[in-house]
Amino acid sequence: MRDYVARLLADRYDLTAVGDGRMAMEAIDAGVWDVVVTDITMPGLDGLELVHRIRTDPQHKGTPVILLAALAHPEAAVGGLVAGANDYIVKPFTALELIARVDAQLSLARIRSGAPAPDGDADR
Image (cartoon, one colour):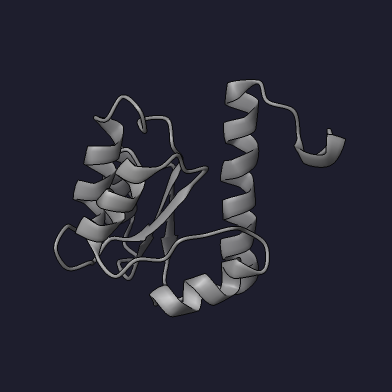
């Protein structure tokens, strides 16, 4: 799944892909990220715990997080959102859906921060 998501996003975004939740947290701690896309099911540290750690870290608490999950029932999605995720995408998903949701989270983050749209495009 990591390789698939990286291939989908690599043409549009500068990204870092890691192998598990602990490595993800280390990468997050080492930099500033515009958005985090994570699977709920990961070795070492699951996606819900990763979201919790991001939300309780003063440096990263505002970083948008998108959870990817195989669980399609509404309670799972609500659980991810309650945990602090900004979005919840059920697998399988299309490339267009993932890109649209990442774009939406980046746009919302810019709006929240008051930053201008990239390349002066006010409509994006």
